[in-house]
Length: 266
Image (cartoon, rainbow, N blue to C red):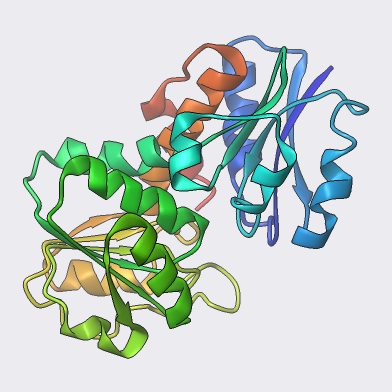
């Protein structure tokens, strides 16, 4: 039996086990199983030291471990080296390698809209936001603003990626075409009723929330009511999962079927 799984904290909201176990079964991988493990930062080193013992072959990595895991791998992709965050670990002949499939997952739904964008406001400065700003840079956006509740984190990340940093209370002054929520505000649980943007959507065309539980956050509901194009985190989740699955197996699962499956759980 080969084990795969997702690590992070909190982890109970994750649909990664549903997605990957369905894909394993769909493509006939009876010997592969995907689990979830609640792992905090202070537990990470100990958990990763047992990977070979338990024959774990691949891991999805979520908050708050996307940066911390880089201290425990033998190799990093060039993309990970630039982003300094990973959401995927997979076993190679030379040891464990870190990859970031969040970039592909984030960009695919945006590219499918076929719109020319020049400006964006990113809310949050954690591991996921690193992949987001990296992706926006690849798209060639001229103005990328970054705001975080802890300003020092926004300032540091902005310096790394040549962005414009804003204090949290200043975010409402920005007139960007795209606004992306990478914070946990709106996540199912005690933050579900919260939003990172309780202001009018002046000149904003697209609202993108990386959260997928719930499927429609307060942030997206308000944006939809204001007439914006909205993208939920489910799109990004499925596409980043598709890239992970390729790394784990060398094959792809049908995206449309995966979307239908996951909507039953949301």
